[in-house]
Amino acid sequence: MERTFLMVKPDAVQRNLIGEIVSRFERKGFKLVGAKFMKITNELAETHYQEHKGKPFFDNLVSFITSGPVFAMVWEGKEVITTARKMMGKTNPQEAETGTIRGDFGLVTHRNVIHGSDSEQSAKREISIFFQENELIEYKKTV
Ligand code: CMP
Image (cartoon, rainbow, N blue to C red; front, side, top):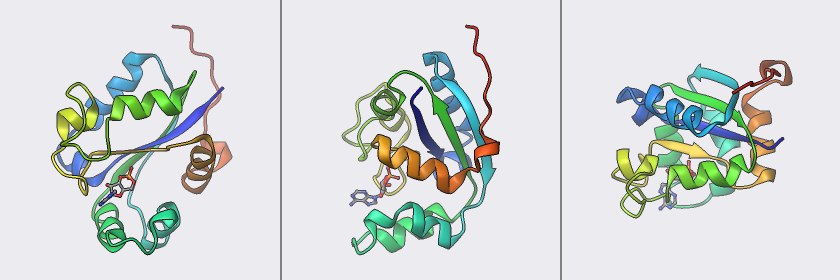
């Protein structure tokens, strides 16, 4: 079954949006298989965002994502990667549709509430840098 990495960013943690965001994925029917409330180190931020290294916003991105705790999660389900991206909305919250997480709760690109893997390859990579295999819980979801 497909898995994705999702992370409630420091702006959304500060605004008490963890529950709201988790609830959306729960209600959709996806299965939570891992979760961690944590502070990201500079090293982890640079590894996670390595594809953006060299871009003009990279330093700000690293300082923002390390500025306060995040809620890192792994979710499982049919086509969870693309569906979660749809539920999150566009990267720039001003362009994100109302009804999406960023459309409902974000205002600017550099504080855009949530991160989600954009492909199967990045999901695998991101899950493995945030979680050990034994931190992901195998269980049966009956509803
Ligand atoms: P995220 O999905 O976490 O992946 C990369 C992040 O870079 C993105 O969300 C934005 O929060 C951030 N970012 C900041 N500035 C820009 C920009 N100009 N273009 C794209 N992403 C940006």
